[in-house]
Length: 472
Figure 1 (cartoon, rainbow, N blue to C red):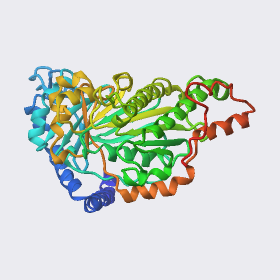
Figure 2: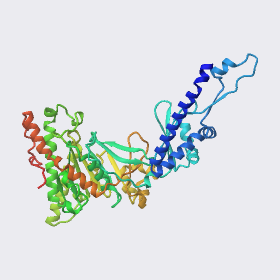
Figure 3: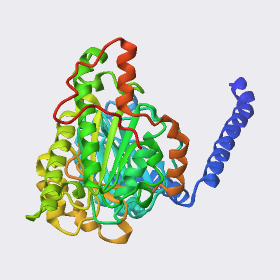
Figure 4: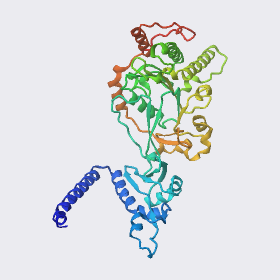
């Protein structure tokens, strides 16, 4: 006992030093945080301190009538029975700029459903705009409370210029609870992007291109149906990273579509011999066999139906019909050989993008739309059952850059705030990565030469020979 008394000052000193270090670390973290995070840090303190009382009022506690081990040991034989214990779930709270993330334990009769029923009470108590509750593994839930709406908070993205770890991963932005939203494009044949002019379609695609540009295992070809030359349109800053580009000229577009189909045919004919697999995604893309992204902006330009009896109108009508057939080939047969087609249009109704092409694309995004019919064309008929998530509700200027899509593993539809990429950053990335641009057809020729194999010869056919796709 005397030894413990002698050591007490030393123990108190150690405790004081540790407490002071923790307080100093917390103060530095608070000072260095931005304004939104500081508010959330104070909110997190209130959540921790008030949790026991709030949990009892919200019905998130359990009364355990079985006495604990200590109560059983100290209980007297003829004395009163120990009072029942009220069990409160343990929580961990983490703040960020939008609000707090609370990870909580479940208890018997207090599971995921009970937390979800109490979400609206938690939102009021924590002064949050909305609160979501999702499973976080066996016996755990994650409660997300956002104080400010991430959908109306514009965000910017500055590309790092470093190659992505996974070229098939599309980081779209954050959802309405500020959780990151990512889509895997591996084994995806096509993507549709719809929305009114100025709603954010091109900005989302620009981020996608800027993130993939530093990888030599990705090659991009662009079509822009609202300009004649790249310098006139939205891709003027990114064209240096594209191995080919075409404007609104239907003859040039048709020729380039044919060459892409020829590339697809060649890849299909040699993939088993060269890569040893039937599906490129089993081994992944490489500089020798790059993931080829076909961007078709203002896609309706290349598929519109021309009506008229004069020779020129008939010729244009024949071109657009053939364009639809060629793009159908890319979408339906390009997945396994590493070709992804992204179709971008103001609306993806059947008169803008043929349904036999649109309905094969498993991933669909829609920015703001004016009509329910346009929303249904972009996202499917199920969007009628989720009116709160409909892109028709995104016409307010505060929602520029917000898209809606159906996410695998989530019920209904998810609203996503996509970040803005400045033209200067896009130009910087394109300039820095322009040396990585290569024609996939030439890459395939080089790969066949190094493996000592020759092309089977079925690349010459109705679509024409596999000539170079390089920009003139």
